[in-house]
Image 1 (cartoon, rainbow, N blue to C red):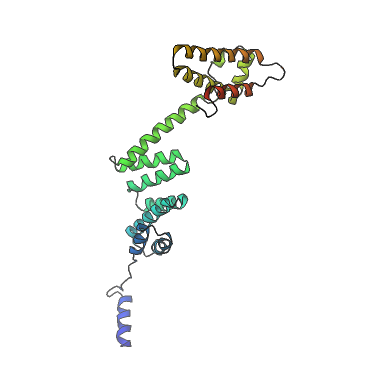
Image 2: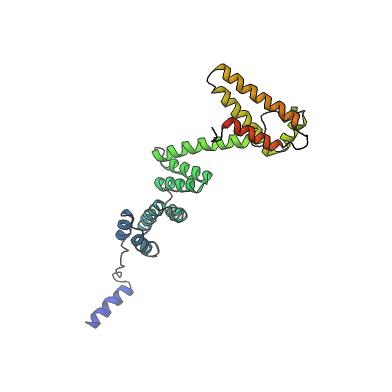
Length: 241
């Protein structure tokens, strides 16, 4: 018996029939992630993912499954790490690009989210989730870009500013933003007025504020920033409406 065993082992080691290699069982990992069982999944998936003998296709499946489970449990960074590793192994996974994009969005990284949604659409132009996500994020980035374009700029042209108070507003980004918000909020209030008389009264109140601001700036005790903040709050109401 011993000699027969030794002969068989030697055959495998010297170029005869190759010795059988035990296949890594991915089923427990997939079952645990599908059941949303974090405890079992941690052990079962690690046994697959950390095993250098795991086949590439099975490794990708385990990473994607564990990544989805981690995402459901708000372990965002770990989920991104699993999705990223899966995409390194197989960069054709549109679903995983979209999933990672949604994770980037949860982290507040909008540029990376848009990049992943775009990558998903390059792979699958008809990917419905990626299309919806990409469209929504493109609009959001356009809105942010528009806000950045006017950030630090008041409602009036600083080149034509002649009053001391206007020049002070132009020199201070915070005051400039306040001025633009006051102008926009007042325009909204006038536009949404219930009747022409109310709209006229609202605009008159704004004109009176500007007149007081112009006259008060530079006088002892006058706080321009405070006056502007109070005006914005008055227009929008205590709750911001």
